[in-house]
Length: 224
Image (cartoon, rainbow, N blue to C red; front, side, top):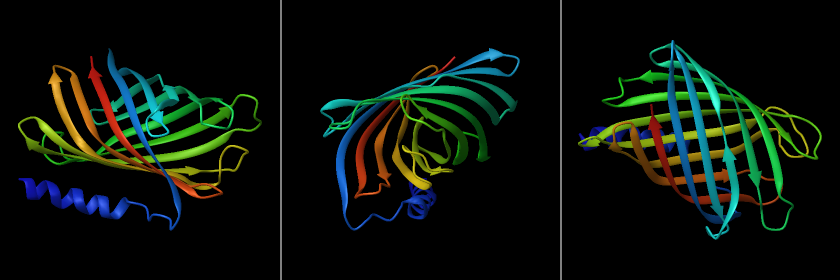
């Protein structure tokens, strides 16, 4: 079973990992996330999410995000969402920024039943606006996620997500801007609760040297 998991997981990682630049800045982060998926009945769902991202060798809160959304189940494996996100970014040096996003999302299953090897997708279209800056940044991001059983109820989890700017503004570049890749495990800790620890690599494309963030990522997911 372990070799069957490693095979598709390794192949997926090899296909999606971006090539590292010859010279790039690097940082060590800790990202914490809490998500809740609430069934409202008659196909409606409520999505709630918060993230705390500790940057600069995980020494300070560099970014905070809250993202609520409302969704509707088209069928058992496909859901559409409309939502809003607030992002506070506080880098060392540049001024703190406050970002507001509107997003539309389609979540769907491509393969499997959630018990064996399963592949899901998530396509999100964002309209990004910053306080005290002109323009709206249009961005498309797509996540491909693979999970597979390991031992008992513990599952391996791999995902990749590139971010593409669809226009250029003072705060967003046109084309590939970010690429995130994650490898970890999903551990049920009670009815409706799952912990997902792992390693997240974030590649940031910049006008100067690119940046690579090596991130210890921990997500607590709940379903009601």
